[in-house]
Image 1: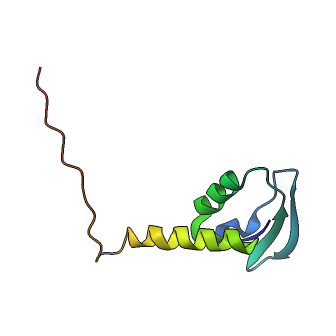
Image 2 (image 1 turned 45 degrees about the horizontal axis):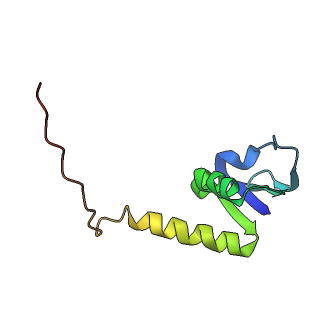
Amino acid sequence: MRYRLFGALKQYEPRRSHEQVVQHEADHYIEVVTEEDSCFWFRQRMLQYGASAKVIEPEWLAEQLRETLEKACTNYRATQTIEVAPKPKEIRC
């Protein structure tokens, strides 16, 4: 897997033994190659980094993250109606 980190994360220093910095553009980004045991946890980490990260390879994972983030954005658009669960009744003892 290959990814880039931008912004405050461009100074990232790998802490995992399987991560290797392959390109470092000090003013712009850092690019890292890694082998991960769990796509789920790698995906969660990339989502956590938000706009400061971009998966380069594999393309299928980059597309999956793109779709997830697009769906998340719709949750914040003012034109979207969000259903709210009814407020629970207050119980007095």
